[in-house]
Structure formats: structure tokens, C-alpha cells
Image (tube, rainbow, N blue to C red):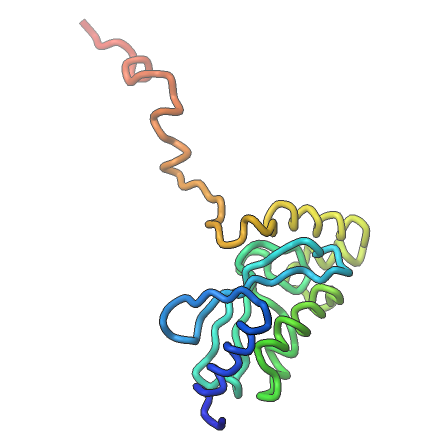
Length: 183
């Protein structure tokens, strides 16, 4: 069991057998998505997030890379990239930990006990420290908007500029825009 690839396989199988929905990105076992449910005793309850996991070649000696795919309002999660600021993953990782620890202990603890003094989302941290009820309301709004269970796996709703400016959206014709031709 000393081989990192064997350990990777074992940890991934253990995660899959723990009732987590795991979706592999390709044939390898280094990149995959896991559906993660918000803890029941938190404002994140009812939300489901797709978590991107990348295992480095040196896993379990080097920590996995963890990121939220859909948006979450949290002081220790970057709102744009989904990166997580969590000491146990970023600095104090040990080969004694496994992927099940990440999803059953580390991420639930992160959501239950945010650390606004070490923020990746300064706005969320400031709101949490200034007005806890307003912070929790914003968390619930994000859950409703971005973390509905039925939306997991759906592509983010982003319109490209081509879609926004389709010709069908306009009732005017080219002649009306250009004006009448000179006789």
C-alpha cells in the first residue's frame, strides 16, 4: 500500500462507497467532481455544491486541490475561482488524511465555522463580522440562486455577447438604421 497510485485508487473507491456522487473528468483518477451537501446545522443547509478535486502525483503526501464549481458565499472561499482557504488542506495536510476526511470533516467544518480573520472573500468576512443575520441571509440567497440540487452539473448561466445581440431581438431593419439612400 506504499504506492501513491494504489492509495489514490483506494481513497477514491472509499469516497465513492460513502454515498458521494463522484464524476470522473477523464480516464485517469487525478481529476473529478464530487457533489457536496451543506451541513444541516448551518445556513448552507439544503445547498449542493459541485466540488472540483485534483489529486497531485504525490498524493497522499501532497494535499488535493479543492475548489467550489458553483458559487458559494463564504469568507474562506474565493467567489470567482471557488478556491478554498483551509489550513488543513493548504498547510497542515498529512498522508493520514484521505478524501472522505475532506468531505465528511474538513468542508463541513469550514462551512460551520468560517474564519473571517483569514478571508478570500473580504466582503463576506466583513458582513459576517458586522451583521451576522445579514450574512446568513446572503448565504441563503446564494444557496437558493446557485446551489439548488436540481442545478448541479448544469452549465453556469452565462450569456455570450453573441447571444445578447442576436438579430431576432431587434425589430428595426437595416434601412431604418442607415436611413434612406440619397436619390
